[in-house]
Length: 157
Image (cartoon, rainbow, N blue to C red; front, side, top):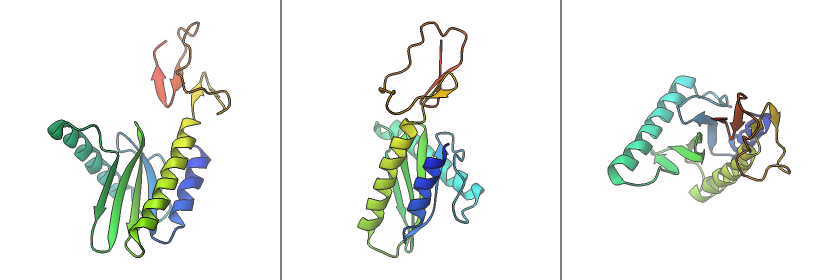
């Protein structure tokens, strides 16, 4: 994960209500380190529970995968939001200000993270700049035997 994603998350954590935030993979593994004192065991446990609920909801209700999950306790929130198919933003926040402000800050962060994640395309060991990337998978012709990555996934050549 590049430094840009961590800077985006740091900006969110500096808002008044957010205690901590991290990015996790679709396998409930940490992608970024926590900014505060949120421990890895709690993060991965909550991520695993959120991903289980996402899968179960789709299975039992026939819905597409959940995009957002907001859990609210008396004084705290746990929020999980999908940034792309393989990356989730987890936020731990306190209920000390209007909910609308927290939602706006998180939505801005997710939008910025999506842009940052889309620009992290790796092809044949070199980064493709946003100017040269058109959103289409790379052409695999002539790349037999080489490992090609697109949006963090290995492509078959």
